[in-house]
Length: 104
Figure 1 (spheres, one colour):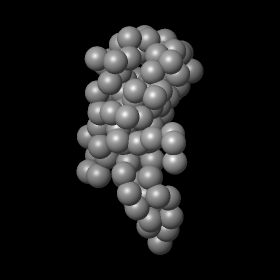
Figure 2 (cartoon, rainbow, N blue to C red; figure 1 turned 30 degrees about the vertical axis):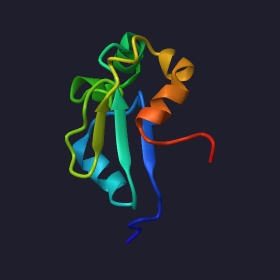
Figure 3 (cartoon, rainbow, N blue to C red; figure 1 turned 180 degrees about the vertical axis):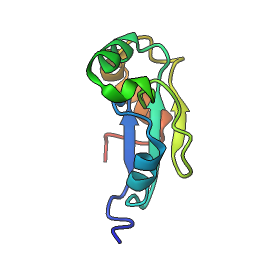
């Protein structure tokens, strides 16, 4: 059993399918926080995800919606993220909202 092998996971606008079984498996190896930060405004992610993912027909991308999986902390950043490139330009603000810091 590999439980707790990863300290924390912070996904920002993740282009991965919300497949509950896979997310539960990933969560099982994380000791601390497992955050799915998403924005319903990220139309670039939505378009690219639908064009390049067979899973898009069955599941939404984690970066577009909450992952209803026990132990996953879902944070709606739609108020702050109006487009895909906002993740880069607003990174300091987002980390502060997550109670994280780049300062160490």
